[in-house]
Each structure stands twice: as C-alpha cells, then as structure tokens.
Image 1 (cartoon, protein in one colour):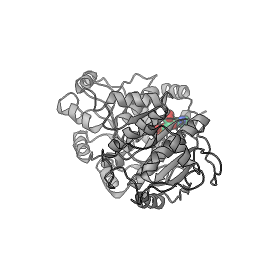
Image 2 (tube, helix red, strand yellow):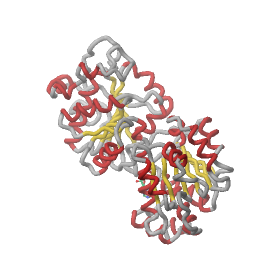
Image 3 (cartoon, rainbow, N blue to C red):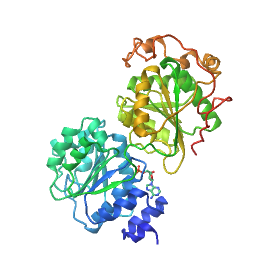
Image 4 (tube, helix red, strand yellow):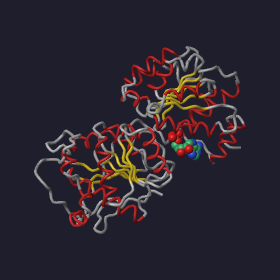
Amino acid sequence: MSYFETLGLAEPLLRALKAKDYSEPTPIQRQAIPALLEGRDLLGIAQTGTGKTAAFSLPSLHRLAANPVGRHPASCRMLVLSPTRELAAQIAENMRAYAKFLDLSVQCIFGGVPASKQAKKLVQGCDILVATPGRLLDLCDQRALTLRNVEIFVLDEADQMMDLGFIKPLTRIANMLPDKRQSLFFSATMPKAIADLGKRFIKDPVRVEVAPQSTTAERVEQYSTFIDQKEKQALLTLSLKKGLESGEIERSLVFTRTKHGADRVVRHLVAAGINAAAIHGNKSQAQRTRALDGFRDNRVPVLVATDIAARGIDVPGVSAVFNFELPNVAEQYVHRIGRTARAGRNGMAISYVAPDEKPYLRDIEKLTGVRLTAVPIPENFVTQAAALPAAARHPSGAERAEGDRPRTRRGNGGGNGSGRRKPQASARPAGNGGGQRNRRPRAGA
Ligand code: AMP
C-alpha cells in the first residue's frame, strides 16, 4: 500500500498519481496532506520545487469531490492566488493533471490577455480557479466573477505577492471571501510582515516548514567569479557555448536585474549562435508563453529572465543558473538558484560579481550561511573573447547608452571605474578548460 493510499485519498486521485509516477510523498506532502484532509488551515513555509502544488491540491480535490455541489454561474469553489502568470498557468496545469479522473473543472485567469475571453470561461462557473490578483479583481469589478462560494482559498508565494505590491489587492480579495472557508497560506520566507499578512487569512493554522528559512538548496554547487561588468557578456557567452557543446549544461537560466538587460544578453547570445529567449514583464503574454514553451521542450536551451518572471517556474533539468547580475535583495538569490537542482537532480549556480556588487555577495553569504566558491576568470579568456563575433562580445556603445543600470557612469555597470582590468589566470565553472583549481561542478543530469 502506498503512502497516498494509506491517507485515504479518493481512487481517481490515486490513479492520477500513478499516471504521474508519484510513489512516495515529498516532505511537505507528508506533513500537510493529513491536516488539510481534516479541513485545517495551513501556514506553509516552502519554496517551489518541494512538491507544494500537490500538497495543497490533492487534499483539496479530495474534499471537493467528496462533497459535490452544483456549479454556480460566475463563481468557484476553490481559489488559488499566484503572483505571476507563469506560476498560475503551471499550477492550473498541475491541478488539471491531478483532477484528470474527477468531475472537477479547473480554470486559470491572469493579465496580459483579453479579460473578455476569460470572463466567458467563467460564465458557467468552475470548481477550481487559479488567478493572479489584478485580473481577479478586474473580473470581480465587472461582475464576471463572485467569490461568495469559495470553500478553499490558497495564497501562494505570499512573500513575492508583497514584493510586487499586491498588499492592497489581497486585502480587497480577503474582504470578498466568505468567513467560513479553509485557508492555506504559503511563502518561501516568513519575515514578520508576511506572518502579519497571514494572520488576516488563516485561523489557528497547522504550521508546516520543509526547509529552514532562507536555506540555500543543498544540491546546488555555488560559485562566484569576480569580473568587471563589461566583461560579463563575453564570459557568459563562452561559458554557455562550452557547457552546451560538451553537454555539461543541458538547459540554463540566466538572471539579469533589468528587462533591458535581459534583452541585451539575448541579443549577444544569439549573435554568438546560442539559441536564447528572454522572459520578463515587458514581453507580451504570447511571447512569454512561447519563450517558456521553447525552453521546456528543449528548443531553446537558454532562458534569460528577470526575477519576477522566473519565480516559481518549474522546468526540470535546469543544470545551471547564471546570475549575470546579483540580486540586491539576498532572498532573491535563494529563489533564483532554487530553479536548478529540482526533483532530486544536482545543479550549479554561477554568480558574476562586479566590484560594485560585492556588498550584495556579502549579504547573500550572510543569509545563506554558504560561502560561494570563488572561481577566477579563465587564463585564455582574453583570447577567446577576442575571437567572438564583435556583436557577441560586449554591449555596443548604443546599448550601453540605454542606461537601465544606473549604478555607474556608463549605465551598464562597469565596476570600479578603473578601466579595463586584465582578466586573471585560471578557469571557471561550466568548463572553460584546463587549470581548474576548484572542484569541478557536476553536470545537471
Ligand atoms: P512544485 O513544488 O509543486 O512546483 O513541484 C515540483 C516538482 O515536483 C513538480 O515537477 C512535480 O510534478 C514534482 N512532484 C511533486 N510531488 C511529487 C511526488 N510525490 N513524487 C515525485 N514528483 C513529485
């Protein structure tokens, strides 16, 4: 008898789990499912990648199926709030798979696509609605949706909701929910402000924590390379070329601080013959979906993202995360590197640290308690960089003038202003050849 069977989950759910090949629960599932089946509220401290979606979906679907009620027009029985469109779509897709053998409908609504189409989907009502807060309120304001019949409410990624300034929409949504409901509140971190927010939603919750707060994913090997901002592009291009050609990197996520920065990195990678796409808030929903689909099915091995767009995205087999720029909020580093080493795999994270980013590195190391292994720039970097096509090497003057990185005179970083530093000897992660002094990172498979 599997663990899921011992919990008494409905047979159609067990069948769906079999189809997904889940035999054992993840720790958060083991901790959360029994309490949720009893109808308790839950406060969960967990990052994505821990199996959190199934942890809240399985017991909820079980309870909804056990108590069938007719569908009310323009309403839902379970509401899941997610901060980003991509995460909402991912949760809905997972829930559809878990509900595959049940007579429960799942709808998903988010901004960036016409509201009228989504309103149409809601006319007949649905059982489960996954939504981003802004679009949810739009549809409520248009009377295309009521939250009056919500029995189960899930607030996912609460800390990112706060970061994105969703506090007012969340308060409005909370006021529209019926008092009698089951509430689940998830956050990757639980500073006091988030805990206070939680108190508005949950009553006497069971508390579930699967990884100590701000603990860095254990299976991620973490490296830093000190490098001037203007050299970063060439180093990234060379590292990706080498890693992808050798098979050491299967798929890679590159994080930039700004949307323009993400586009710029993509242009340089493409000029060097590396298939890459950008995903950030200035892209249309169609572009974001295309980029993510291409990344998921391996047509595009490199996705360049800003933090907001990438949060929560579950793509197996991301073998390397590059921090082209360090995040200025240390917690964000934990989220970024959590994109690799998922589902039992290993992964590596490589951070490029310009001189003016050293304070961010210190914050990250303090928060995670992990000292990043410093890897020098490879010996042959200058020669190899010079051999790259000019467009692939470093930002052109015109692009530098875009000025979306205000930290230096040149608008594209550039560090200590002392001019071009000659790269130092030795190698770096992702295999730039001999002379590597540090532990060599393993491939992500
Ligand atoms: P999540 O944290 O919900 O984004 O889940 C992370 C990944 O783990 C997803 O790809 C899930 O399909 C997978 N997963 C969740 N639960 C299990 C399980 N019990 N066994 C195997 N894989 C799982």
